[in-house]
Image (cartoon, rainbow, N blue to C red; front, side, top):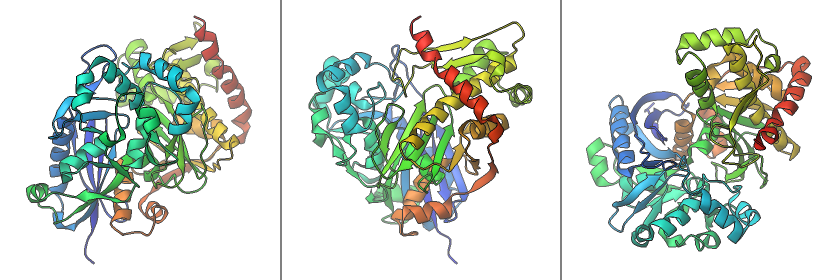
Length: 492
């Protein structure tokens, strides 16, 4: 039987990964290359879009060096979200891309709240008002560098930019346009209601299509350079968060997904549109229905920061193994230590960019292991409360699929199971976003009749961790106390 593969490209914040996937969701070959960041001013975080392209080409060349390139049948892209590039009519970059980490538009957030109203913005975009969506940075650019917007022919997400470089035409998917906060998630189109207030028009954005639809054909020049099949199609992928959910089959009924990465994302699939301050609502990676997604900006970064600033400055496997062993012998509640992890402000449920971190309840007998455990407890409970709120809204949750570096921590995995009282299962693939892109390509190229069929065939899971009912009450009590820290520290 002839081999057949798809390419899943994950263009993330710090690197590009290109993975060759087979029809069982097994990685056959991969390549990766870094992407650098610039911070020209406090709160400004930028990248040169040309580096997205050079990083893709480097990683693509690595991945294709180990396979017969003629066996590649489709391509799709997963991309860092809320990151925006500005191109002139010739396709040249007019301004470094602004990243999702960028905080320059805090004043513009307040202005648009007053002009449009928080409820209107939330209803159209599914996103509570926050600095992350591109909408507010567009207003900042219109106020501070209007000559850039005047010359801008295309305002592009990362997928749209890479599709333009690969095919010569800028197109993207609903799920890459959606996180911009300029997209109507019910009508599936760019919102003139919002864009009129930031000095840009809908025709400056790329055509947005359903995930899995054909975005274009790889150009003859790229086909020749990489010895790819002629007329190789690229299909709609999406934002890396949605693709990661697809890569752990969170589209199957009753599953939540939890990405324990630098930022922590807890999400679930919903057929109906649900709006809440406990999550942001996104278009599903299938294009049908929605993903409800709670985000902790600091996430696992908080643990690394804690070790760097308050620990031994070492983040070796031995350090984590020692802390894991010690923390496992400390009871739920970390003997009175409570933590607030909002080093980078708070998204859900408070949407407060000025929120800060805190350690409370410290006594002389507390050790580094107590602080480590309390940090994991706080991160766990932030996500647990969001998922409990989703369940109260009628979203069915029977299991949590966990990905990211934190999934390697047995202590953390057990915390998640016991605090939510849901079984927890780790994905066998640590590259869920790239796999989600691969699944999108597999659907587009016709390997499977639906996203549901493709995800069931191409995702694989490890051991299942069952919750212990006898710990449920302790976790509920801890969650109630830990959730009060925000109000207490807000007055400082």
